[in-house]
Length: 195
Image 1 (cartoon, helix red, strand yellow):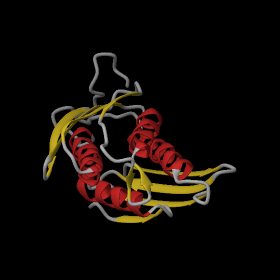
Image 2: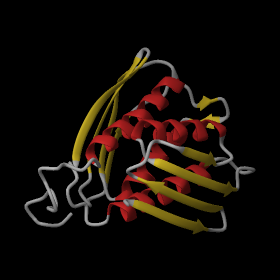
Image 3: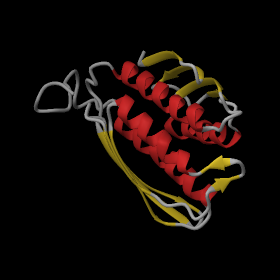
């Protein structure tokens, strides 16, 4: 069972995350940030990762801490669930269309955290959600999961569609990269022998 569970409490947030990589995409999401809940729900559905995220955060200030800290906890839970990374495909990429928007996401489950994020939003808000928080989530998630992640929106206009294409792209790329490759057997997919 490739599963991870993280509890994280600071003066700004109280977070519980659990995930199962080899799930069916079930989600129980309650972050207190409606649009972010929607993004995590579709992330679970398209990655087929079973995901539970509960956040109590200082949203009376803004949504920043809740979104960023959820990314930290989700990244830590994924890293925990992966263990030695034996047998995974490791690399994957996807082009994700969302109406007028097209986003490319590439991932290397490498143990080397890095984010390249080339996505621009033409609006600062989606409802009450700050669009700059999309990058904050991806940064926190990539660093704490220990993955190299490239996200580039090639074109698009609608901020909701752009954000959704990023989250769905991440989900679909991870779904491929985390899948077990029967040809790898019990090996780590690296000439180093460890990731």
